[in-house]
Length: 249
Image 1: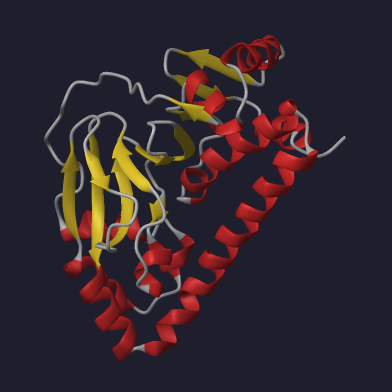
Image 2: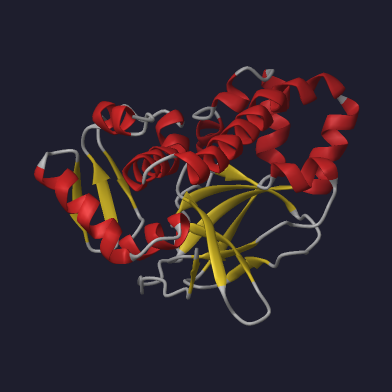
């Protein structure tokens, strides 16, 4: 899973796409985590959030940094990775629009377990740790809303560990593409197709295999109508077929 980060060069666009409280509220309601929360809590969350802009390759936080808050990707992509002292890098995940992350360090108060960088010009919504924790302490019943979210994270981590040990490359690749799409698909989109801003090099780093091996599988899938390959991105055209491929044979 080692590799060197070579992000795509994307022109900087500094106009925020979520400027008003109404737009931020609508963004929250796209995620199941917030849909069942009381109206006064949604209002408090919207009012505490602020927008953070990161140009291409900018560092969001280092591994071991104190938690700043919980993040949502509005535009662009955040690259989650871990590096060794000699410069080797393991790519752990790509957080695309609709994806929330940072909740573990936020809730437990421990340093970040990974580093995070912008891949392309990116825009985030930030829920500051101090304000969110104060809200949770005043309304402890809100913790239960985070339990399904955290359980899903644990389940996905377990599935990835299992996949690394037991699944074929084709099964692991299908699982990883579905995982990358999951946050956005759960965010309220009705589109039967989804384009992921992930390159073949990204996938090879995630799965610990060669780019050539990834290309061979993707080429076959494209011929069968499951995906479409683009420069620096992949469109998922048949989610049901990918789900079947992700199952152990």
